Image (cartoon, rainbow, N blue to C red):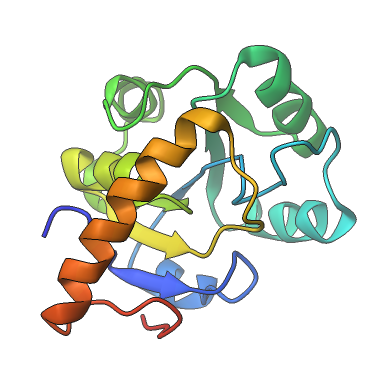
Length: 171
């Protein structure tokens, strides 16, 4: 069940961050594309900025994305958070860097993202809390389409076993 999320919510605004804090989560790793922003967006939306500003009071907030530095840096700098572009998720090399830099154990970290293959795979490999959100839009990067095809097969398998159903949110 490596791609099965621990929590599934419609979007980043529906997540109960107080519950995460009570679970002793100290670091929130956000995916960028279709989680924090649309894939063709070049600026941070005000409501995202407000949420991240609020979260930074209680959590270490980091962006980990497979997108290039030119794109990821815009959002990281605007939000005032560390960011890791070209992360090659689901490999966990960036997670190892984060854990070392901030002296964190896996049990204190959560990944929030919109893809099973990359984000939930990253969480599984890193033994961190996995929070899945619906993508902000249907439009994806071309390379993501392959992952979405595989993701759909996995979701169908989970659905048949009553483990996960798209649109049935839980925590």
